[in-house]
Length: 98
Length: 313
Image (cartoon, rainbow over all chains, first blue to last red):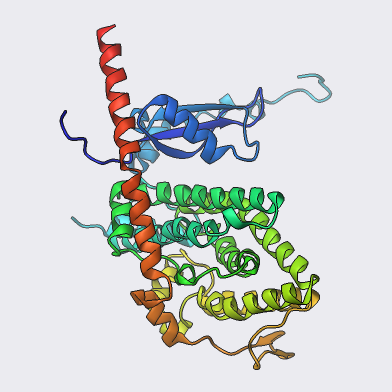
């Protein structure tokens, strides 16, 4: 059998849902060799005090992130469309439930 | 490459008290400083499991044993939070662990002192974790995002550590004369090394200027040490324990206690590898790493085998 190089395993990002119905939030990462181990490690490292009722683990190299240098131009299209916000509109005095 | 523009953005972010994130441009020295500080912090958590682990099998009750197990497990978890924060700066877990095992990286000098009696477990929780919390509360506002977030989680968990230590000391201080003496002896031995945990005096601290400039640290070693003394003294008095410093007096003008500086020659000696337990601690870490190798190899082989099966199926 070929020699295995000693390793701490790949990095997996961990997301936790604190309570049913809430969004999953990124809490950190763990090292693991496969998904079962990633799940168990995430439970042991991030939920020792009832921090969550559900966990997602995702291999870090599958995360695609925006680059901070491009932030200006990347999000630019959203900046000049104030009509997307309800406060943009003028309504007659006294109107209700709208 | 001209980095002036990036440097301006970096400085402006710090000036606005915004956090620096892993993908942001940062000066090389900022990165190096953080890798050194965060990895030292991680190694301290991991090596810190050893002096306490020493008492798990000899805890005086099942309650005490369960608590100590949970605390030591937390320390391991804190090490992991911090390693992952360091890894976002571009260093691998394998490199970090290698630096610890080969003695290239340092860890807190406090863990090179032995835990001789059960009261030492109390003193570590109360004094050592108390000092660590003082530092870590400040680091929740450190300028590097992943480090700050790790600190928030760690601080939440640490307050149980300090309270369980103080509870042990309280019980022993109110116990038999022998238990009382044991508690006092533990304070006498841990007091000075605990004061050293905050690092050298500001005037002689080589890394402090940059750490403050980059907002990695928000307060100086001496400020934190003073606050620790101010908070801890009344806690000792309350349970009838004293501190081994004849120079301790209330200073009305500064609204704080005057105290004697620890023996910085001893500090340097322990940091350089000559403390009572340096060799034992590193030998133990290396042994644990070597003896765990087969587990890592088996996990890798198992994952590879499953991948092959899935490819065939």
